[in-house]
Length: 417
Image 1 (cartoon, rainbow, N blue to C red):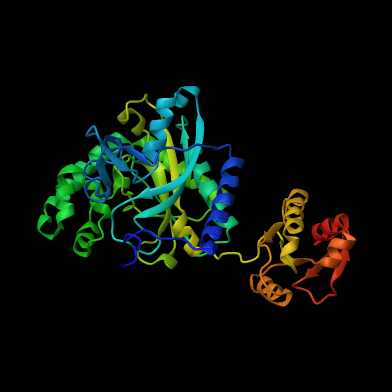
Image 2 (tube, rainbow, N blue to C red):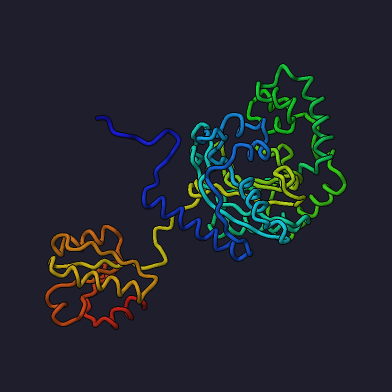
């Protein structure tokens, strides 16, 4: 019988990969919490209509990339391809939008049926922050500052922040009309997707990766020429704020993001270490989305970090902040003593990781395995230790003699280390 393998585009994580991603996620959540973002959880499965309304019916996500299915009553459901729409749906359903300005965060897997690539599988993990109820530029600026703080915390140097303004709804309508006029003269050079978008959302053509289409776009009208005064002033305030905060950025007038709900500020963090698909964080403002989902008018902005891609451009810290200890038995009859000691040590030292695997083999082999597993300390339990009610402590990373300690002395010694 042939073995069962995982489906294409879905990845397993080994213990070290999982630990690295968990450490990144925990650090991000700590920073989110320091900015008063409150964590929520939304379903992995949502109604298909949610993404048709929000992401856009003509986007690649809806047309090509969603995992769709029907329940037993024939209702169209999807595995969520992104989190913003579900988060805002929840805020509307729960009445959170009626409570005034609020900051929410969430983390979890997303799903898109696309060609697997570096840092992006068909199941990928995102951690996100969303701000509702603040119309001023300060909300956008705080999100940029928080994301920048996260990446600085991880010591990521080779990254770039790219920003653009798509303008408000009226600015986008005027620009879309002019862009359509310009691109219609080059219809023969446009790829199939761009020709379809020409009729539905010309701005999305700016996001095309087709080389011939990119040549046409090069001399296209610039959206900056069509911004309303309010949008232009707001964009200038954001840039001034970034300068004041010492956050470097590059303006990219072709940056539109891959979703239809954005207005005004959009941004991405990229890294050349990720290859051609180099974006690992993206977001912007989406003031129209609440009404599109049946809620009241509500300004909103947010961003998402691709944790899989972030893990690729950060170095896993092999040494953890907590110490590790293995309990080694010289005979199977001391299993109860070992279990009791492991329980007491975990209770009295919350930062200590205690490995107990019962009686395994000879003392020499167990010490070798502990050293191979990068364990800091070994506590040996044998007949003399049981008789005297003392414990033998060996510091595996130091060339020191073995210590014989009472329990209180053992706890103190481990904490001092």
